[in-house]
Image (cartoon, rainbow, N blue to C red; front, side, top):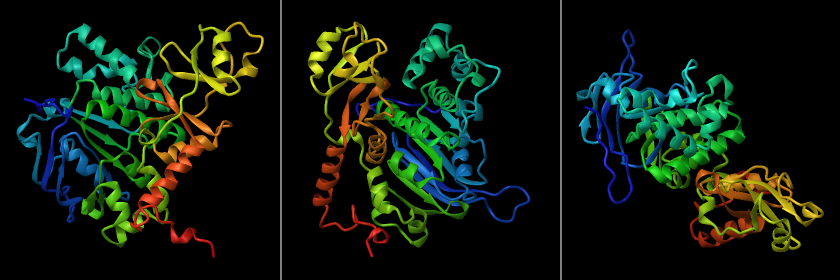
Length: 398
């Protein structure tokens, strides 16, 4: 039997995970790698294990799906003792994503995603439909990517396929071991945004391992800051940890940039967006030019994804919108943080960034004026709470 899941009225499809006095000691070692960890991970929440290298965070996570067997203690998943479930059945019911995707090089993208559904004996049509659905979910066109091999993909594309494979059998639990650690910073930010968009829809229970505290703040509903042998130094919301680190060790791990981390607590979806005129490539040039006026607009592809921005100068004397304008540059999503938005805006000539929603569809535009006003308003709201948005003393003028 596997871990059963349900989807109640609140939309949560994940299940609770409880670690109760869990330890792991490897043969021949006098000291445990993980010592007496107790932790409850709520159903449908995104929990991040963060800590320095060698702290045992990956070992702790791998004990959940029994890739590593605990020496003592119990782990329950959805109310069932993990040790009472056949290990293979357990792993088939838990999604697992690792760094660089972990894809099978001799299999196509579609075959990689279909691995667990085939083990579960799904019929061909159901598997094909699921592969197409998941490729769309992670922003890859099925017609273009399904028959490619991993070597034909970029690092970011491999990670997208890895996430799709982990979600293939619709598991209630998803374990992720530094999945974005090997990609460049821009791609990493986009993958983080996509993962948050997916989680907003599916509400799995996600356990995510990282050594990057900024990533933990951006992604986690809760963060478990782990010390040596996975001792739980603090387990709370990102807001609470930033405002009140439990001890000097946690404060040191956060670093001196705590005030900047506050920008990672707020999402683009929480602020007001502007709307720009939009058009598809087959639309009328004259009509689009009239709507743009003396400002600028956005050209969308057939799936409503922003591809280029344009103004009246670009439209002068042309008969078609196809190929007109300039690439939109770095996008942000509704799940992006204000820090992401600020970085994207600073890279754009329009002092604004285009915002996408689910499946990369156009959603609006965030401007530098809106961002500044939002931050100013938040500072005023929290002026009586010095732990929130206070200037870092190290950043004060001398």
